[in-house]
Structure formats: structure tokens, C-alpha cells
Length: 532
Image (cartoon, rainbow, N blue to C red; front, top):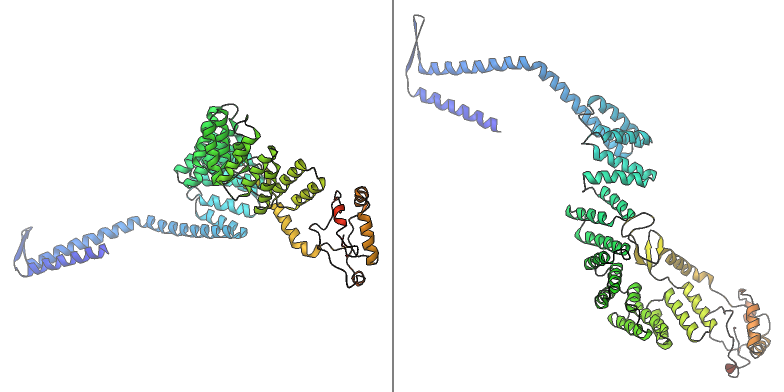
């Protein structure tokens, strides 16, 4: 466009010049070698322009002829390069699609048309083709050769890292990731693997520096960076709790400041403060964490903040936590445990039953069984509660990659992933409960059919009830839990005036079931139809 405008400007200028000369006639006289030439001014101007044009054309022709060998070779070189890049592009597409044969074919074609030192992508295509063909050794050699080229070094490290991960050699993978992280901290895969290596070694300070670098380069969000820092600082505080209490206290307080709702950080900070007799500040930290989300470790440390407190003082502190988070199962469980320690069985039983109503789970039934055993010693009821505990959903625990732990840990023991533990119920137990509930309609217990007449059966049942507790216990221990389907003949033998009895809450009687209360025998009619 600019050239066209320049050409038009030149033509317009020449037209104006010739028009100006045409309006001003004149002659030009040239004397040369004794001869005198006289021409008009217009003819002289045209001749000058023609001579200049002829000189320019002649110069262009001479220059074109002089540069023709280079121009011809350049044309063929550009054409060859375009064909090579076309082959390289087709090969990369084939490698991405998983076509190893086409990728290898285009690799050879591109290598013939383009020099590998001019286009490093040929090395990548060759390595990808080797991987598609299953030649992992050749691919590793190609990735290792990339380490000598500064432009391809990161690509080679990435390839070696993936190969080490495929072989399960985590040490080699972390080595390559560490080299890549030094060169380019913004690489997510290198930073994550290096972070796992540092946490596996317990180098919490190095891991904190790496997280700060990730945050400064905006590789991770601010909230995620604060979460990671809180986890690492909590782990550091736990590791230094005995050897360096002051450093542990500083790290735990910083972690709690970053995430006040993170229970392990709150527990670590409060424990460090309690060791230095700062009960007030530690209690406030635990209260803040409890208000965010009640946790049994927070409650345990809060109620035992002062080792010299009496059991009633611990019960009062547990009730204080309950006031902060009312109508919560964990609050009721905390009060029930403290009340059990204080021998206040009525309060313990009331709170444990309230916890079961709010959240039916294993720990609540176990606690209620402990209360029953401590208060009454009734082994029958204790075993009944234990059986309910077995069938109830499990309590939340620290779970990471299928591993259940009683204590929180900063990394997963399986994968080494940071902040892998979650406070929740184990999924495998939930799956079993769901399966058992789905199968429940098909496996409902049925009542054993009565083979004797109803009158004889009723009389035998009453006579058996009046024989005393010892005979009842022996009969209960000797009876086998054998269930047979109800038949039509059994129901046909039942008289029309027989009265039904409400089924018991538990269909199966426990071995320690005390049987029929002697005081209730007189109230029951001998003609009543009994199922048990």
C-alpha cells in the first residue's frame, strides 16, 4: 500500500513538472565537440527522465543476474524447509493421536529436510515416536541428549521425570524435578514434586521457601498458599515441640493465625502455650477453633488444659464448650465423657443419648456402653449397645488415600502428598453400611414356626419363665440361633381368639439376656400367644 502511494506521488509530481514546463516554453542549447545542439525544454526534460529510467532498469538487470544463483538456491531451500515443517507438523499431530508408525515416518522425513540443530522439535518428535513404539530406552536416551541443549533442557528433564514416574523410581523423579525447579520455579510439576521431596525429608523450612516462591510467581492462589503454609508450620511445630519449644510456639501461632479454623494448628499452638503456662491465650485459641468446627482433639486439650484440675472442673469446662456450640453431637459427647470421669452418670447418659439422636455413630454407642457398665454393670445391656455400635456408622477420623490415622499428619504415607488428611468418616465402612442396608429387605429375620399346639406352647413358655434365673441363663446359652421360615401350617394352628404380642426391639436375644421379669409373670395371661 505504501509503495502504491509512493508511485502515485511520483507520477503526480512528474505530471505537475511537465505541465509547468509546457506552460513556459524555452530552448536548451548544448555545444559539444564543435557542434551546437538546440532542443526545446520539454524534449530535454523527457530525455533526462528517459536516461534515468534506462540506467535504473539496467542496474536492476545486472543486479538480478549477479544474484540469480543465490536467489535460485534460496528458493529451493525455502521450499525444502516448508516441506520439512509440514512433515514435522504432521508428525506431531500423529504422535498426539497415538499413530506411532506415521509419527516415525514423518520424523525421518523431517530429519532429512530440516537440520536437527536448527529445529529442536525434531528431537521431541523422535522421542514421542519411540514412546509410542514402546522403545522407552531410546526415548530416555533422546531426553538425556536434550540436557546438553539449553533450549531443550527443561523438556528433557520433563521427559526423564515422566519416565521415572512410570518406572516407580520416585527418587529419580524428584531429582529431575528438583533440577527443573531450580531453573524454572514457575513449573507446577517440578515445584509439586520438589515440595513432596522436601516434606518427605522433614525439611519444613525449605518447603516454606518453595511455597513462598510459588505464591510470589502466582503459581497458586493466595488462599491455597496460606493453607499450605499453615500445614507446613503445624508440622514444623509438632517436630520441634520437644527439642525447641520456643520455635515450635512461634510456628504454631503463625499457622493458627493463617488458618484459625484448622484444628491441628490450633491444638499445636494451644499445647505450646500450655507448656509455658499461658492457659488463657491457649484456651482462647481452642475456643475459636471450636466455634468454627467442633473437634474431639480440641475438646480433649481444652478440658485438660490444667493437669491439676479436678474432674468437676473438667466437666465445667466441657459444659462451657457446649454453650459455645449448642445442638451439636460433638458437644454432647464432650460433656458425656467429662461427666463419666466425674461419676455423674445421669448427665453422662443424658448427653450420650442426645448425641445419638443428633448423630447416630459408633463412638456414641461405645460411650453409652461405658456409662452403662460403670453405673449398673449390666453386661446384657452393655453387649446390646456394643452390637449397635458395630452396626452404626463410624466416627470421623483422619483419612488420606485410604489410610486411617488416629492423629493428623502433614503428608500422606502412601503418596507423600501434602495436606492429604481429611477429617471424615472412612468411605469403606460407609460402603459396607450402604450395601447391608440395600440387602436388608431380602434378609429380614423371620420367626421360628411353632410345631406344638398353641396351648402347650403357651404353658411351656410360662413354666419356663417361672423356673428362675439360673434355668433361664442355661437355656439361653444352650439355645442355637437357628431361624426357619414361617409355614402356613404353623399359622393354621393358631386359634382365632389368640392375641398378638408386639415384637421386641431386638429380634435376636443376647446370651446374657436376663429373660422374663418375675414381677411381670402374674400380669401376663397363660392364653396369650407369645412369639418369644
